[in-house]
Length: 326
Image 1 (cartoon, rainbow, N blue to C red):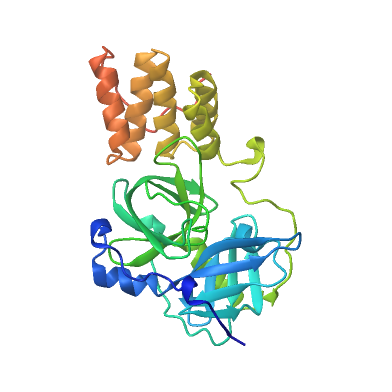
Image 2 (tube, rainbow, N blue to C red):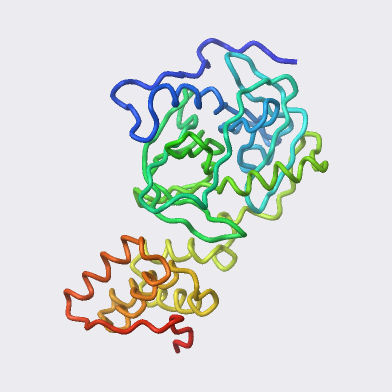
């Protein structure tokens, strides 16, 4: 049964003129805002967890499991009403939970694909960041990290507590990611789960994987909350870059490029680490490898130009790039 909600909690569905979006026009924003909902989850140990969710079917929304993990009950807020969640399906490792909300009748978004994005492409984040009204953040794709069969999106779209489970949309209004986590200490360390994971989960639930709402298992942890040795390479690399640990980054990127020589990110990070240690010929080779795999990678091109300016001669790039570094 739905419950009346205090008017003070009604979402602000209009974007103020001073925050007009670059990627989406006003009409598209208002339409999408109706599909991004607020989540409340009283915790077993007391207190509440607050987050966001995106409607992907009239009676189904997707959010982050770290929002609902300890919940004894979950409510989704829509149009001034509080709707109880009856069933939940979870993928704890990917930090995605699908909630079934009978009678919600929300407007579902159109699912896109993270794989269609390009570095530098404009995207828009929508979620309940730090307050009761929905907020938007325009930004661009910084990196696409290959992980678990898809690409985790890193962008400049600012968000904080309350936005977890919100949506990341391309300039056609398609859902390309679910806002999930951020790293401290940078303006471009915001990450979203790829829409491909959402589509896969939706397909799996058609075969019956929903359970009644109750606290979820404490293990496994989401990939981004795991210990350093269990985290994806791209997250370990981000921490090393933040802390200027260039020799450690070199070791990680060398192992990464050997294990997955087709990943341009590994070669870019290796080139960055070597350049920071003034090993310019080796850095140039690694950066040229990165660009041979992904010619549009602007950061690698800029880094390569800097290395060349500092005196590193051009190096013929082996095909494939070398994988036998010591």
